[in-house]
Image (cartoon, rainbow, N blue to C red):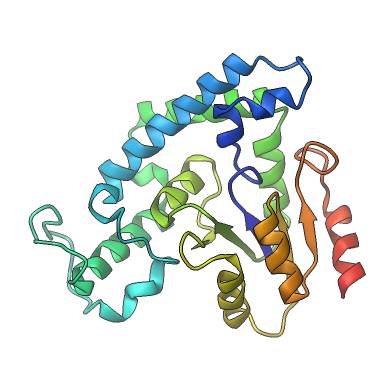
Length: 246
């Protein structure tokens, strides 16, 4: 099982917005262009979150994974359910579970069931612009994912925006855990319980996932500029880290 950090590993956004991505290239990258690209992503991610994924309603009720409130779902038909006028609040776990079920269905179906043709073209163009600016960072990371059978994503961000980022950055239908409140070590333990008797490898850019991997005695591959980055990181390099630990 490959456990991937999201932000600044598979997805670049913060480093575009604050210019640190461009700075790593010692003047060969236009930082203003990177900031502009980052702002496009930031603005539209929030729009999709609020319009299609109930984020304005549930942003204060972050859960660590989609099925966290499944036990409260009574299976009610949601085809004509009025999410805007059902009196939702955090005390009503059933209504919270309804929203998570609706989000799960939208997430599994992908953007083509949500956005029209014009918006799909906009996101394709923005993805390709970002991939070109970052020398194929996004597409090479995605290609590595496609080589593996089981990939799990752990993000320090809240769950719903992270799911939306997955869809918009073409990381469709990944299993996602939010460590926003639980921390990455707790998430890693949940993943170990979900996938017993297998080997694990963690890939990320931060100290929290590094420390958690060490606590679990799992190999950790650090993504940075340089030495290991997208493109450039290969499965052969990752397998070397796995062999060292196992």
